[in-house]
Image 1 (cartoon, rainbow, N blue to C red):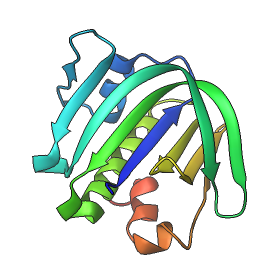
Image 2: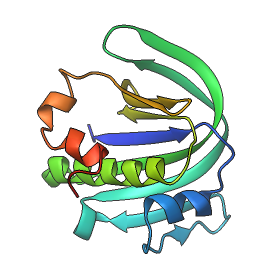
Image 3: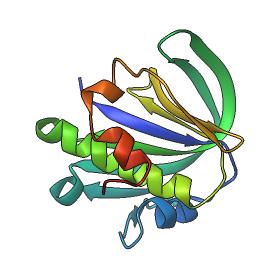
Image 4: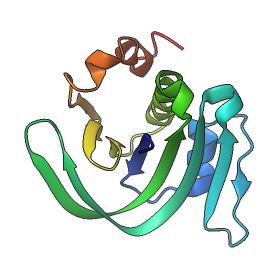
Length: 150
C-alpha cells in the first residue's frame, strides 16, 4: 500500500494558482488534455504531485473521534510519497500545504490515504486532528506548519 496525502481546497482556485502558491519556482507539467498539473519531485522532495479540479468530491474521513461525510466542489492536490523516504516526503507535502495556507484564505482539509483527517481550516481557523496517530509520529510537523521549521 502506498502512502499519500490529499489537500482539498474548498474554493474555485485554478490549478495554475495552486501550483504557484504551493510550489513556487517549480515547473509542473500540464496533462495533454489540460485537466491537471503533475510533477515528479521524488529526487528533491521525496514525492510526486498532481493538481486537478473536481466538480464533486465525496469526503468520508475520520478525525480520530468521528466521521465526516459530505460532498464538495474542490481543487485537489494529491501527494504520492517515495516509499523509501516517507518521513521526508510527508514533511515536504506539509511544507507545500503551509505555503498554500499562508498565501490565501480558502477553507481546506488535509487527508492521509483518503481516510484520516489531519488538518482543516474553516473561516481562518486551523484545527489539527489525529494527534496521537500522525502528529506525534512526526515531531517536526507542528513547527513546519507554523513556519518555524523549513
